[in-house]
Image 1: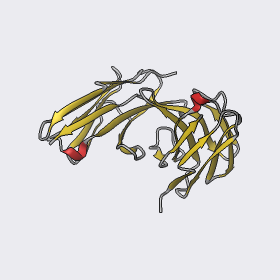
Image 2 (image 1 turned 135 degrees about the vertical axis):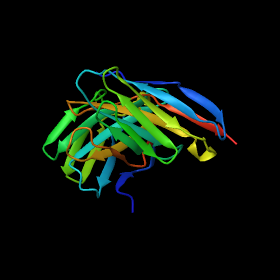
Image 3 (image 1 turned 30 degrees about the horizontal axis):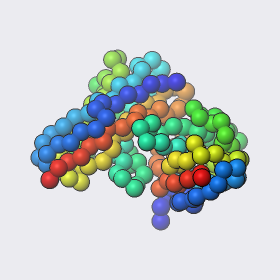
Length: 111
Length: 113
């Protein structure tokens, strides 16, 4: 079983601050790394999927990078807004087709 | 209309009862999944199905069973519910390729008394 870990578990930032979180995963048999955004009382929504070492993806103020050799991915949020408050999940897929989710980073953006 | 739907959305039941949670999708995806979410534990995979004739156990399949009635339908059953099965249950779907994005239903909150 893969062990996907996320840090920090939670954080609070002021509106306008930039922030980042980490997802670490076993690099053996790696296939893809996913980031999801999960708002309270809703279901997880996909942000990015990355497969290649060095991949970078961007959507508005949110971006992500991938290092498959060392087994980590960063998610960055530039100029955090209150609507960015959510739990951010990462999931790693191996060549056996299974998803393994981390426990998430809970972000609260204070107005 | 939502692409992935789950019924019921909330259910309270008693220990020992049989419960079925249903998931339907209109995305045309071959792959479907059932997860449970407990506070502090993230999403744990219960069962998954890559097509109608394929059923696989996930990390925590004990106490659960599934049925893939059609490409669009994947049901999760608790044969004899117990209190530690109280959780939020999510159904998800994905396309054929490994690593494809999963699309989640709205969740079913199950409470076993």
